Amino acid sequence: MKIKSATFVVSNSEVAKCPKTKLPEYAFIGRSNVGKSSLINMLTNRKSLAKTSGRPGKTQLINHFLINENWHLVDLPGYGYAKVSKKDKKTFQRFITNYFEKREQMISAFVLVDCRHEPQKIDLEFMEYLGEREIPFSIIFTKADKLRPQALERNIENYKKIMLDGIWWDFPNYFVSSSSSGEGQEEILSYIDDINSNLKLS
Ligand code: GDP
Image 1 (tube, rainbow, N blue to C red):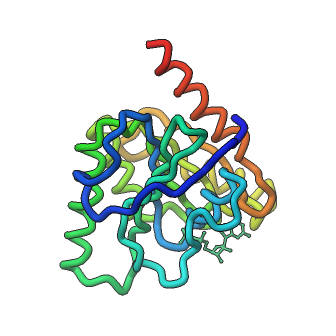
Image 2: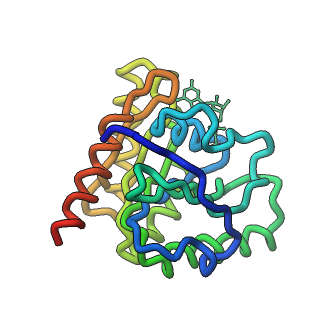
């Protein structure tokens, strides 16, 4: 998919206020600092479409971007910021679960994890939540340029092992990305393009 246009539409704190169009949308989510804004900018060939995090945990909003006039890329707030209070965490959880459970246009999510890190409880729990509700998602291993290929492979294998030892029968679809090198751009955009084409046919 070639990106012909990418524009910011709206930021919301409530799912009910998200765009009313029926355009298919794809949601990007992950821990603060995982590289989500950088990835969104890389995917769309824009320098600052998504704001790279000045203060992690501050932007607790659902951001819609219109891509090629025919689908929405949704930037969800980063989770797992240590300095957020328990009460805020609860509110945040409800906010995110509301989005996933109520937003009919949401076709598939991308859960971003930093390829350098061991699987984190918060990410695994979040993916379990998606799995239990049969919400389609892929994993994106970010910041691939920070590891040598062998170490990257090892970490992904470790991720697989831990998920398959847990509740998972299959390892989810996954991508590897680097916002510095552009790795993953083609694969992720083609994946979205293929789904969009099939949706049009159905
Ligand atoms: P967000 O909080 O998830 O939106 O993360 P950001 O996109 O703001 O990135 C957090 C930090 O990681 C910033 O310092 C980025 O420059 C850096 N970063 C993000 N993606 C990559 C990547 O693919 N490679 C490298 N080397 N650094 C990255």
